[in-house]
Image 1 (spheres, helix red, strand yellow):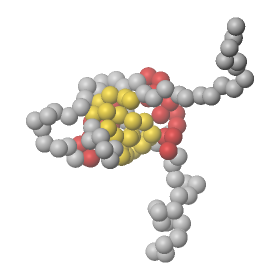
Image 2 (image 1 turned 135 degrees about the vertical axis):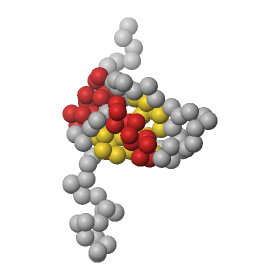
Image 3 (image 1 turned 90 degrees about the vertical axis):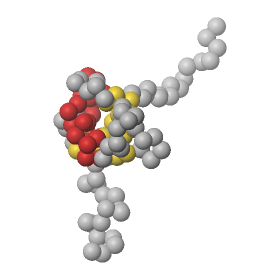
Length: 108
């Protein structure tokens, strides 16, 4: 395979899913249990989110994962409704940061 062919995953393309189709989860792990594999974690996530396609473990926080979803509608549904039937998985919600210009600082 050529290094710059369209099949190469090192070069982003328009067919790649956007980063916005992900949600972050915190997974609770038993302290006495053995380290879970990614397949085990994905199986736990699929109980709560059937549309989950893959998980990406966080490099520094071992209990935090990003979940890749199949559609933007699935992401919006998860963020709106939350997770049901998931005792060991918690959704990390981040506030939306917006900038509003044109409002005076001194309103008096």
